[in-house]
Image 1: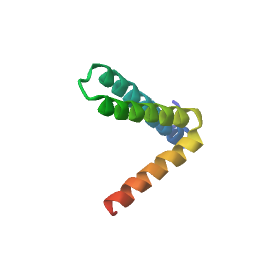
Image 2 (image 1 turned 180 degrees about the vertical axis):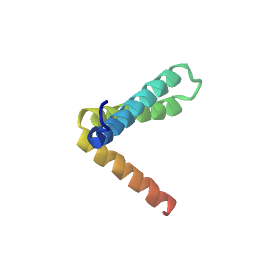
Image 3 (image 1 turned 135 degrees about the horizontal axis):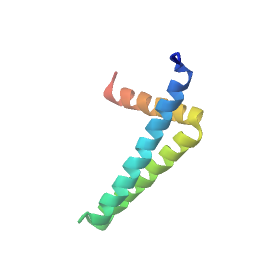
Image 4 (image 1 turned 90 degrees about the vertical axis):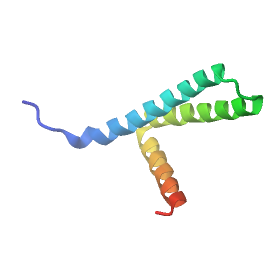
Length: 83
């Protein structure tokens, strides 16, 4: 029976966050294609989608950098909420 090995769990979780970011970016690009928004609204959605994809790829490719990036984003969100 294999024993529980928690050493790889943080790496796996960071990679899942990166894959989630890439998926959200791709879905946003798909949404932009069929949305009836103005050109300015579509441009903002495209920028957000590309940023999500880039952050996701960085997170998956360089896990430690991605973990620091995720931590910084959570810190900024907590500071924004005043916690």
